[in-house]
Length: 86
Image (cartoon, rainbow, N blue to C red; front, side, top):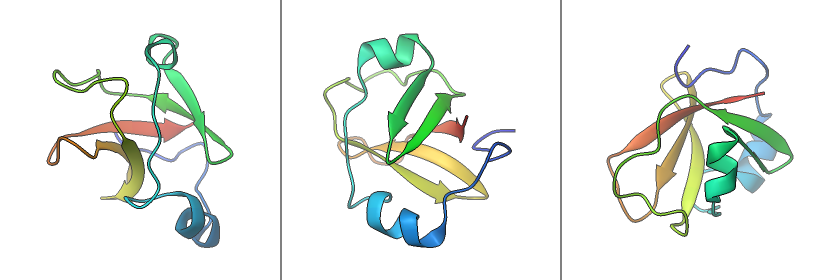
């Protein structure tokens, strides 16, 4: 399931205070190499490959969209990668 949440869903209150485009963070190369990262009290797994042109020092954020969770790069709008809660 792309952008899935079969392993959980973030509560609306917690989502509002930690997630969305107003709450950015960085993902390290090591996080991506291990196919997972922690943010906002949740562990996420990468489903999609890291997009060409995205830097590991770029500001990224997580949004719930189209029935699943996705990571967006603040500097490269229009591209997203599918992630899920582990």
